[in-house]
Length: 180
Image 1 (cartoon, helix red, strand yellow):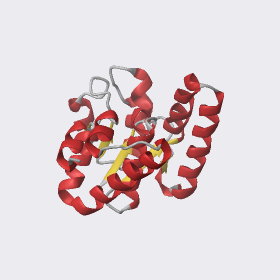
Image 2 (image 1 turned 45 degrees about the horizontal axis):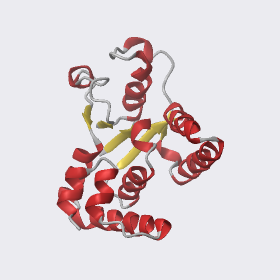
Image 3 (image 1 turned 135 degrees about the vertical axis):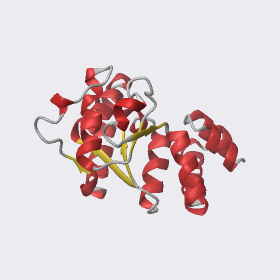
């Protein structure tokens, strides 16, 4: 399964680490475009120049680790597409160009199911997506989540219960499923 990751799901660190970790575990194939990665890096600018610099380093590392994940949108594709927010058409175009099955986003209203279905693409929020992947590969998803939890705990030097961490990452149902 191929899933295009919208910028809004790459920006939060814990969520991104889980999504990329599950892909690294071979459960799905991630996709994105250069524009999506740039949106992610620019979104961190509001946290200050250091945060943006760090994000750009993470973007470079992601590109290096996943060179096949970056989708180039053919010229003209975006002109034939429609979404309620014209600024999101590039996301749909990248999903089409990459042969994605799904767009993973929090922005449900900007990606109406009908418009996506015309292109053979579905939309899921990250929580539903990761729950589906957990049903398919519970050990791999749990292992990735546990590794991310352990890293968060080590970096914060405070206990990071799984359910609390995942709820903060906007993954409440996955947190409930994994417990702890």
